[in-house]
Image 1 (cartoon, one colour):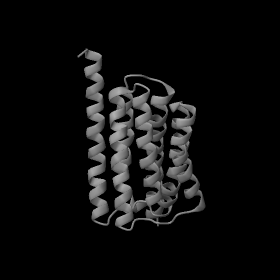
Image 2 (cartoon, rainbow, N blue to C red):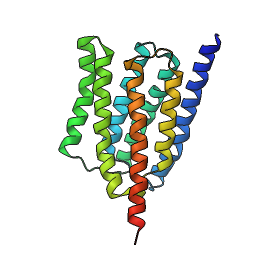
Image 3 (cartoon, one colour):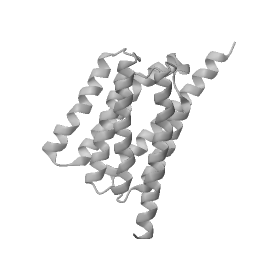
Image 4 (cartoon, rainbow, N blue to C red):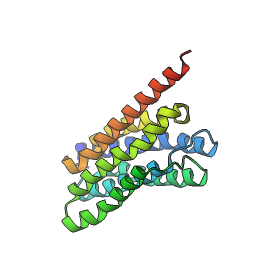
Length: 198
């Protein structure tokens, strides 16, 4: 194996390990009732992440697409847990819009035969899919695990290093998603400080 390829596989393995390091405590905290994720956000994130991972693979992302696909599967599992463990079920009209936008990405990709269109749609959906969780985190900042979102931000950076082909298709989603994780982290820290002030 060429040195560059083995380095890409190493970065991919590291990103996958970080994915599990982030998700396992988060999943445990859901089982313990300490974390109550927003169900719709996690459904949207799971669908978008999984489809983007497939699009990255189709666009020759190689080992760099593996962490995104695994993250998509784990995210869908969190959505199932959020539903069965009675997480946050508040669903607004805009939540439904984001959900249907996410669902539209596959037919549009199929019709246009261009994964970039699907990735752009899904990246926009990812941004809007974060909105219910931003709203919830603003109101209830102590119900989220900050380490989860920080690890995912780092994981996204490493998964970018693992990509075997760089294009808008392969980099857009993990770049934006990592930025959203950092913004979410900052919001929760700010709100916790505000709420702790006398």
